[in-house]
Image 1 (cartoon, rainbow, N blue to C red):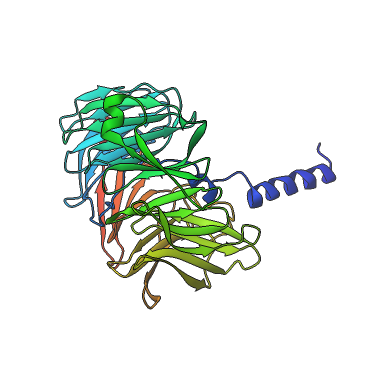
Image 2: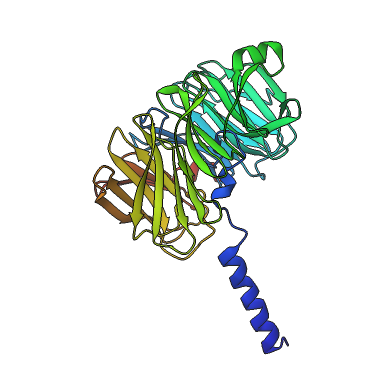
Length: 408
C-alpha cells in the first residue's frame, strides 16, 4: 500500500500541475498564422455577419455533420479519411463547401459531397489557418512550421497551391501572421521586420514574393489585421502593443507594457482584434487593449474571472461578449471547448460597460458562438443538438440525426 506521505506528495503534484500547468493558455495563440483550428467551423464572419450553417466533426460517429441552424435541420454527413484521427473543420457558406484537416491530410468536400483529397502535401499536424474564402485564399500552418498556401474558387476547388517552410530570406522565419482585407498575407518575422506577401504572385512564382519593412518593435509575438483597414495591423511585441501602418511603414499609436508585470489572458481576432491582459497579483482586474479611431486604446475591467475561453468585440454593435469558466483554471484561456463544464456567457454594452446578459452554458456539449445564439452539440449516439438564444430564452432542439447512421 502507498504511504500517507507518498499519497500526499502525489496529490500535491497533481494539484500544482493543474494550477500552473500543461493546459492551453494565451501563449498558444502566439507564433501561428491565422486562428487556431477547431473541431467546429466558425459562425461569425470577418465582417460581423452570422453564418446559418455549421460543420462539425462528431466524436461519436467520427463523421462531419453539417447543420442548417436557421431551419434547425441536419443537412448532411460526410465520411472522412482516417476517422480515428483528430480532425479540424472549416466551412464556407456561400460556396457550401467543407474543409477537413488532420495529420498530413486535407480534404475539401463540395456542396454535393464530392471530395478533393490532398491538393497539397504536408507532413505535420495542422495548428492554425488564415481562412479567407471571400478573397479566395487559405493559408495553413502546421506543427512542423510548414506553410501551405491554397487558392480556391467559389465552389471550393483548389486551383493552385504551394507549400513552403517558415524561412522567407536571410534566415528570417515566420513568427505570426494573418490575411488582411486586401488579400495579402502579413507576417511578423524573427528579425523584427514585417513582410507583406503577394499571395497570387507567390503561387505563380512558387517562391515567397513580398515587401519587407523594418519596425521599431522587438520580439513580435502576435499580429492581427484591422478589419476594413488593410494597411493597419495590431502587433503585440515584448514591451508594447502597437498599431502599425503598412503603407507609411510607421507606428501610428502604441501602448507600453511591462513583460515582467503583466500576463496576456487572451488574444482575439473576433471581430475587432483585441488583447486582454492583467497583472499576476491582481486576479480580478484586467485591461482590454483594442483599436479605435486609428489609435491603440485600453479599457480597465474589474471583478472579472481571469479565464477567457472566448472573447468577441464588435465596436460596430457596441458589444463585448466573452465566455468564462466559473472555476479556477488559471492556465485554461484558449478555446471555447477545452473545458466543458461550468461555462457561462457575459455580454456588455462596450461604450458604457453596462451588463446586458449573463447566462450559464450547457456542460459536456461542444459549443460555438454566433452574435445572437449559441450552438451546442452534445455527445449522443442518437444525435442531439440545441440552438440557444443569447439575448432570449430561445431553445431549439434537433434530435435523432444519427439514427440512420447506426448500423445494425
